[in-house]
Length: 191
Image (cartoon, rainbow, N blue to C red; front, side, top):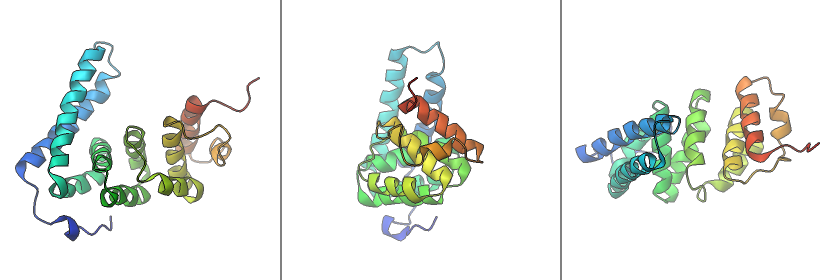
């Protein structure tokens, strides 16, 4: 990633921020498993969400000192990417949002699932216009990822400009995204 780190400080983050970061990734992984596990009940998920929120708050309170951890997360494994994107957008700050956009544009195909998962859980107001541009003019897999995010947020119609092309794309991941999008928005043919 070609991000200017110097404006965020180059000192290593305090250990308390690193602890929040590590705990948050672990809890996110537990939450992903929990929502698929019939043994968990709503109160369990709610308690897990409260713990997650406490660690998100810890990173947000850390301010710019948290950024180096989050930038490393954007280049990491799936849970790290999901959490980094989520926290960066929670800063509700243009510079932090820019980091997400840059990372999304540069993401490898195997990272896009993590971006999609996180963006579906995030507020998009700071990056929405740039996501529209990625949907309309970006490479097909990136466009399909953004379309899925918009569909999740109820901002994509079944007649979306590129959606029909996704169904017949040579990339199986694009076709899979098209069917997930269809599950969210429905189909044009109501016969």
